[in-house]
Length: 128
Image 1 (tube, rainbow, N blue to C red):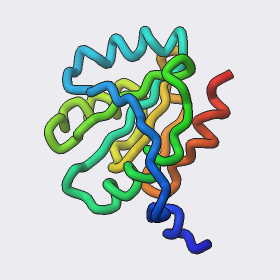
Image 2 (tube, rainbow, N blue to C red):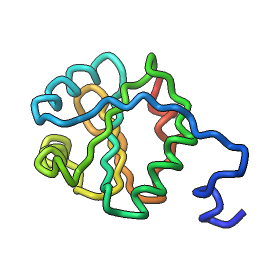
Image 3 (cartoon, one colour):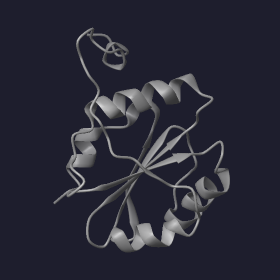
Image 4 (cartoon, helix red, strand yellow):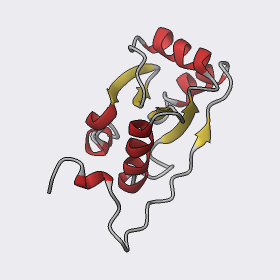
């Protein structure tokens, strides 16, 4: 299987239905910090204008099999809400990228990756 093969859906393969919580207010970051003290919180930053970001989002949706009981999952449209993306970078000490997945645990970024390096398996390892 080639590196890009995993980003294309098989004819009968249905993507997982991920319950995205919309991140559209800067004050939600304080809530995310608090939530992360009980269970990890993932933030997926997506550029709706970028083809690579769209491919990564689809792949993430297909692979994501982490329950809402184990992790909260937020979606950020960073074209519309770029100031929130900037605040994420500042609050959690990560460099802004797109697409990007940041996982917050106990108020700190414990995982940060972008583009094709995003790994659901690595995220799962943080749920213990």
